[in-house]
Length: 150
Image (cartoon, rainbow, N blue to C red; front, side, top):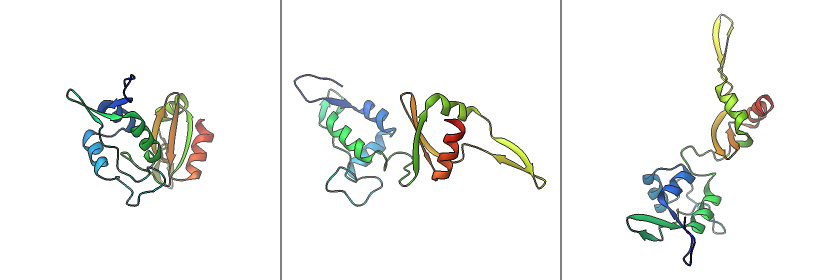
């Protein structure tokens, strides 16, 4: 990103890092929103991803403000694993990392081996600095996980 007399610009690599999407996915998003068929006229929710604002040499660039505004409105409805109605919470990264490293519990019940994986309820996670945002199947999974590991 550069600051100067011109508007702030963002490069393709920065957008891919922000969204977790691939280049082909990004270009599909520019054609139409990937998950919503109804656009929200008062926000950018459901609208296609902004078109590039130009090129610098062979590098495609976008307006940083347009990208940031679109991502703010759409980040919970797009991505590799959208979870529209899932429960989410945040916790410290080091606590979540410790939970990820803990192996599943194996025990026997009625003569059968049962595996209890405490990570089953986690649908998706995204690290945000020293915190991590977690999405769960339901509020019970979120509460149990957070009480156990937070």
